[in-house]
Image (cartoon, rainbow, N blue to C red; front, side, top):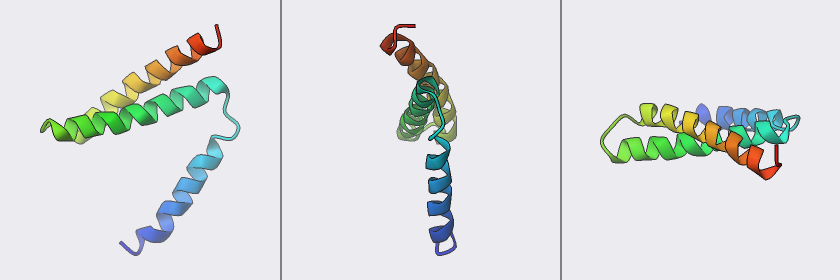
Length: 76
C-alpha cells in the first residue's frame, strides 16, 4: 500500500492535466465514459457479474451518451 501512496497522486495529476487542452466534445465524451465505467463496474459487481466487463460496457455506453449530450447541448 505504501508504494502506491506516491504513484496514485502522480497518475491523477497527469490525468487531470491531460484534460486541459480538450474540446468540449472530448471533455463530455471522456466524462460520460468515466461515469459509465464507474456505474457499470458497480452494477456488474452488485449483480454478481464481472466488474471489469460492466466497466467496459458502461464506458462505451457513457461515451456515446456524452457525445449525444454534447451534440444536443451545443446544437450541432
